Amino acid sequence: MGLLTKNFRLWWQKPLSSDRMHEEREVSFLELFYDLIYVVIFMEMAHYLAHHLGWSGLGEFVFMFTFVFWAWLNGMLYHALHGTNDISMRVFTFLQMVFLGGLTIFVTDIFGSGSGVTGFAISWGLFQLLFTAMWFRTGLHDRKHRQASYQFTAVYLLSALAMFYSASLDPTTARNVWLGVISVNLLVPLYSLFTARDRKYFEETLTHSMDGIERFGLITIIALGEVIISTINGVNNLEAFTFRSGLIGTLGIGMAIGLWWLYSDLVSRRLVRHGAGKNMAFAFLHLPLTMSIVAAGGVLNEMILHSNAELGSIERWLFVGAISVSMLTIGAMVRIIKQPTAAIQKYSYKASKITMLCGLLIASIGFTNSGYVATLLATFIILLLPVLYGVRVWIKTQRRQRD
Image (cartoon, rainbow, N blue to C red; front, side, top):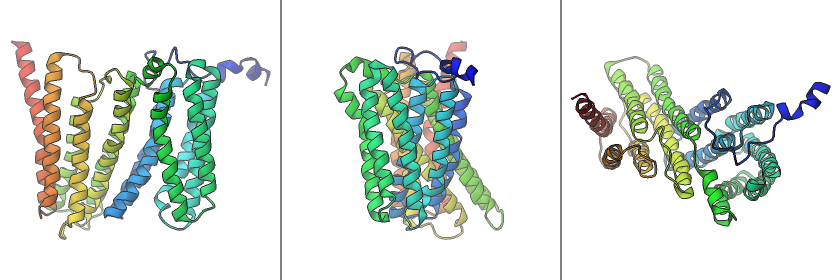
């Protein structure tokens, strides 16, 4: 016991100070382990949408996913800004995972009238209470970050209390309280930015370092993995494997590969341009990106399972809309990230225009009466166009360098 007491600041260090937050570091195993729980949460989200295809089901999916993404963003940013390599950071991370485990159990039941409402309210309340303590602790030890930390502390504490109170309310009223809670949470960074005494310092705080950029790439890959999982599960649950089901499965995996290719070539491992607004936009653009990718996986699963029937208009719109939003979001990100050379910037900007145009073309498939195979094939072909453009530019560049 004496050993623990004497060496308290070795195993329970102060949060990383603002003067050191942008030191170069690699993504830790702890962060990778933390992100694993979102594999399960995304699977639950996709499964819910697959069984509630329709505009109301989509609205419920968006509502739930916003909470999930905000949880991930909080965990990611806090670790990137103030994370330490000690016992305290492990304890805080593991507690997050426990509360997120509860969230995973109850999140797809919050639109019922059973225990899901109470369980979700308590799980999210505990999650916010944990971050209340973490942000208060940060402000206590870092004077430069005190103003923003205490703003987050106040909002998160009130949010936690509101969530606990909502556990005693009827489901409809509770969900209205949650809508207010998540809306206020999402506005906290903007409020902190506009009220910051030292605007320059706050902008530097919000500037994503390379390890943060890698975490955004990782959560995107996890979302893409859900498309592959949904595709394989859909084909695997068919009564018989046929050429048609094999083709549909191949096209489904091809969608994930195509979106990965675009994100990898145009967005990944590039720092965001200077400015708090651009860095906040980059972070929040990953909400529609990951949400639309997971949604595409959920819809794709149902499309495969019912591929012998007629494709409904809603299913068609949900699928092409999800792929379209993914491509439009990737194209928009290109405009706010740094490009290493003028030549790469010229290529990236042109590729982003092609990607966004193809995204709109894919959305237009929703106006057609195409069936399952035709919809998937047309979507895949259009998705390939910006990929092929990138391959063409790369080959020309390599040949020029060789000559």
